Image (cartoon, rainbow, N blue to C red; front, side):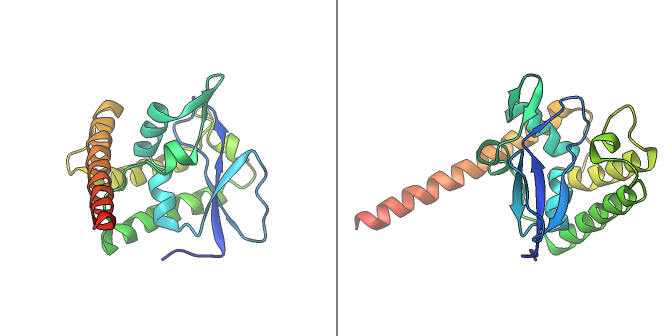
Length: 180
């Protein structure tokens, strides 16, 4: 269930050198600045999915760039990111992993998110938490572990094609329905 009192902050631009994009949760008493986008009402399982290696693989492939940094777009990156239909148990497992990442980040509160997600300075416990989260997210797409981002992308684009075909079929049905 989505929490209407929280949102995830999405940096519009982030370093291409990061293994993970530093997303963050905030409450509605915070105002996001124009260098960010937000995902209102997002929950822990949403956070888990977008803070994964799977999502970063997608970002690397479909996002724009500002210089060499990723330029995150809600229209191109987020809204088109293919996520399979999730069961309650999958959402629970994702939420647990997301909670673990957030708790570990709190243990390093003396650092900024940029410092925590610098690939050369990322705390080892945070790196491990993301690795464990990645395993759960990867299993949403297939049971066998991924060996590369290319394998992840192959599955993402296959699912994307299925999603767009279903969307196109629904649109054709709606057009036919309105013509009658």
